[in-house]
Length: 136
Image (tube, rainbow, N blue to C red; front, side, top):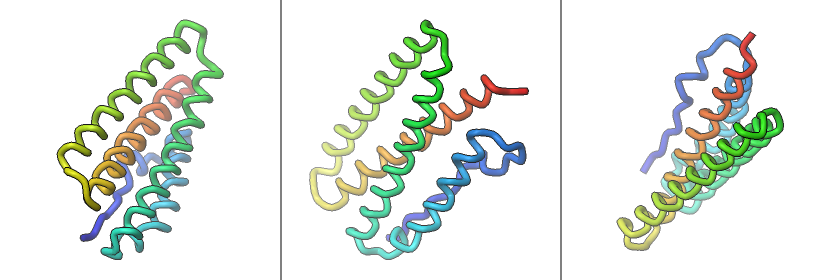
């Protein structure tokens, strides 16, 4: 089994902004873990997905905290509520994946993949929102 992690289309943006910087940082990590993803060894693949997931989560938390520090109180409360709803949605998706996988090695890869994909998407969404607030 080969897992290829592709850089999002937004990595083609020429203008330097938060999202572009985030994508560049994550591309370096993707390159680092790609051999493990291609190895076909489940433990190596899982470790690579975990590392990538943790890195995306770190990026998401950084941009989330940055947004919170800048938003007016009303928007801050809205973002916090939105983030709580996002977390609940991800937990529900993981529960669904767990039931569908019925245990085993594939369950670990499925749940890790679900978390990774959603966290990456959310981090990029928050970065775009930050960039929109700071357009010149």
